[in-house]
Length: 70
Image 1: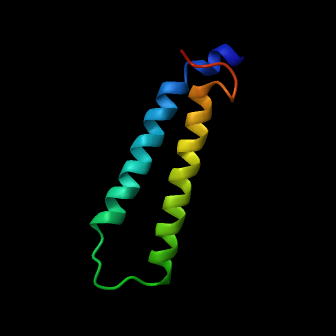
Image 2 (image 1 turned 90 degrees about the vertical axis):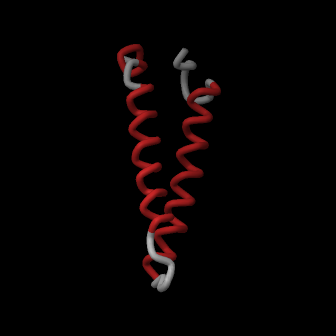
């Protein structure tokens, strides 16, 4: 089953980049005239999720989470 999952590495990476890219686009294009509690909290969560995503994908391509995909 593990070799079959290697096929999904690139599509999942593309999906991750697209979703985080869209989230950052929406966050940065929002009007800055008034930022409520939820808007500030969502920015912190977006920063945290981006950091976790980069760390996990870095470990994946570094060979720390199973075999390297290539």
